Length: 410
Ligand code: BEZ
Ligand code: FE2
Image 1 (cartoon, protein in one colour):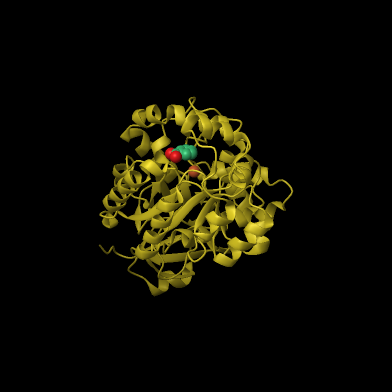
Image 2: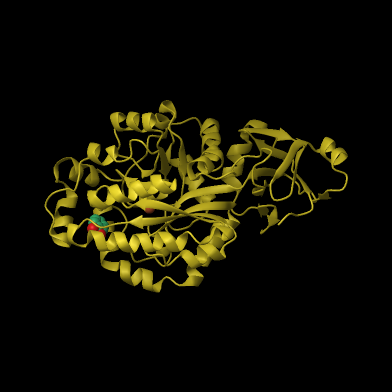
């Protein structure tokens, strides 16, 4: 559907990582032109002009590449502080948590993201229970059907179930849902089905993601079938040996750029491999802090040219899905990095880089891109233009307006 062209303006537009004053955008469902506002109103006299709000900064819609909606019922159930006790609590409570997770809770999770400026997100779906809310929500959803299963006896059955969910999620492109594939992790997916899922991703050319080296316990288990996961695998699955090692796991993804989640414990050699293969990283600072996993070296990723996206993870390891809460946490966690530069990195990570990671034609204010916007209102007009990115992150709880494909939703 096409709309009458509209013109939106703000005190500042976030254009290619810079803030430009008094520019505007003419758009229908896509961006038609981006120019100084005075020029635009002359060139498009019949376009509908959206009233400008004071102290405003217009961004492309923000993007959260990694969330688990099916765990939205968790508040005070799962054990935080350390990775393996948390995983123990997930195994013990996951059925109850997903049973208690109502449609309303998942819709509320989407709405919370929407209000914080999120126009697109990557939803990791373990069971397919979140598909209706992803169809319902106006946001673009890259729907990551998750494959899990370390036991070779049940692996084929689990793969069959995964395929059914993948097919079911492929029927909703008109609701802006795009099917994708998530490998749960190197320690939880048997190599035989892992290989099939990667082959499917290649055949369908869909986005692929995997949790990877989130904790020191994961590293110790993959390197020598030892560490804190040893007792977990013995008691939960009667398993004494890791399914694969780190190099073996990564070799599955050599020819297909993949979005790896967390990667805190990845060493320089593994990160070099990432940069060679074109892989990207989801950075979830609050989840990492709450599960005692440490700090991702985003400065190393920058040095190696590995794109990363700040993401919330699910409410199974977080207390909100507000992307600005996450950006503030990132700002505080990376306390040794330069504040202004870091603020710019973080905003880029949830716009342009996140869109490329999810294969979406958005995340930039450029002609031909989707008309997805998040309009932020600062408390006052910025006196120091260099600090607009920082102030946006510090002060924004909810966006003032939000557009997806040219239509206003906030
Ligand atoms: C499994 O389903 O095989 C699995 C789940 C979580 C952690 C490890 C293995
Ligand atoms: Fe996750």
